[in-house]
Length: 394
Image 1 (cartoon, rainbow, N blue to C red):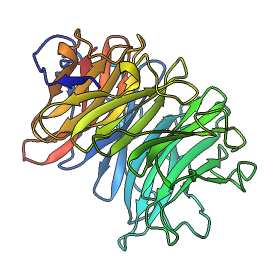
Image 2 (cartoon, helix red, strand yellow):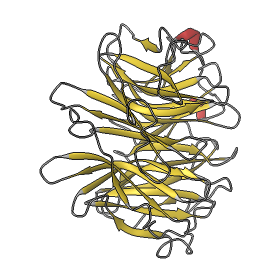
Image 3 (tube, rainbow, N blue to C red):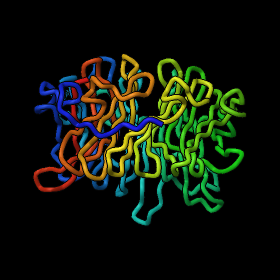
Image 4 (cartoon, rainbow, N blue to C red):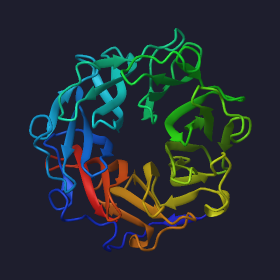
C-alpha cells in the first residue's frame, strides 16, 4: 500500500482563495461550534449548518462567500432544534430540486435518549411548517440512533441510515425510506425499514448513497469496511460484491469508514483511517470489488507522523479525489489524489494544512473546477473551537 508523507509546502492549489469570504474564510459569530454539513446549489451558492450548544443554525451565502441577505434573518435562520430543549446534531444537509433544505441528524435529550430526526426549510430560509420537525418512528427493538446519514432519491423520497449501538439485542442498523413529506414509506422493505445484517456480524452504518438505480450503504463490520447494495424496493442486490455485501480488511489494524461516495462512473470511494493512526482512501468497482486501478486494489494511505483521520471526501469535476480531515498535531488537513490513488503533485505535493492548530475538517465539496469548500472548526480569538468555512484554490 502506498503511503503519502506530509508535504505541506505552500503553493497556490490548496491555499486560501482570498476572493472568498473574508480572505478565504467565513467565521460565524459563535464562540463555540463546528460546521459538519454543507451543500451547494447548481449555481454555487453555499448552504451550511453550524452545530452549536442546544441547536443548529442554517446559513446561506452567495458563491463568493458573502451572506445572502434574502435568506432567513440576514443570511441565517437563527438557532433551531429538532425537539424543543434538546441537543440537535446535524449529520447531513440536502438541497431539494425546489430549493428547500432538508437537515437530517440526531436529537438528544438531557437523559441521553437519542432519536433520528429531520426538518426542512423553505427556499427563503423560513421553516417549512407543513413538513414540520420529524422524529423518525423506529421498530420496537431499536431504541434510538447513535449514527445517522441520508440522501435523496431522484423522485424526492428520503433515504435514511441509522445505527443504534445500544439496542437491547445488540447493535442494530436500519435503512429507512420516507416519503417526500417526511412520512414513513411503508412500500419500502418491511413497512418502511430494512434491517442491515451481514452474514457474519452487524454493521455500523456511516453513509447511504444513490448509485444509478441502486442504493449503496457503507460502514464498518467488526474491523472491516462493509458495503451493501439494495434495489429501490429495499431488496438486497445479490449481484453486488458477494451475495450483496462487500468487505475489506487490512493486516495493520482496524479500518474505519467516515464517509462513502458514489463517483460519476458509479465506482465507490470511501475515506477514514486505519488503526486510528493513518488516513485512508479506498475505492471499489461499481459492483463492489477492490478497484485495482486505485493503488493496486489497496487503500491510499496518508501518514503524517501523528494520528490522522479523513472525515469526508469528494470527487472533483476532473475526477480527482479530495479528502478532508485532521491529525493530532496539525490544523485542518486536505489531500488530493489522482485517479489512480497517487498523491496529486499539483496540489502542494498532495497534502496541505490550513487554519490554526487543533482544527478539524468535517466536510468538503467542490464548488467549481477552481474552488474547494471545506467546513469544520478552528481556534478563535478566545482560544475556543468555533465554526469555520474555508474557500481553497483547487
